[in-house]
Image (tube, rainbow, N blue to C red):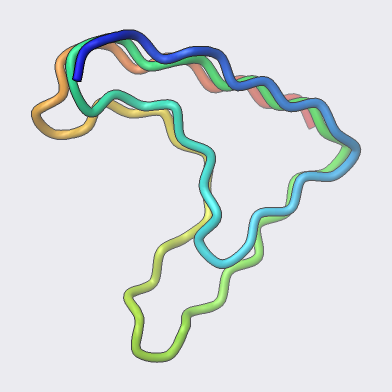
Length: 79
């Protein structure tokens, strides 16, 4: 795939991410990742391993995946 990512912008009082929830604006093909901007009074990550499953933490990511070609965008958080 080829192309640049867009902008992900969230403005909220509370952002809660649970059990592997992710915000992702990275690059897996050719192109530049998008930018992530979050403004919240509080941001909470609540993770608990599920029995029998690999643990995947919640998070905010902006990366260039293996075999991707390009630049990751920025992550801006105001809390």
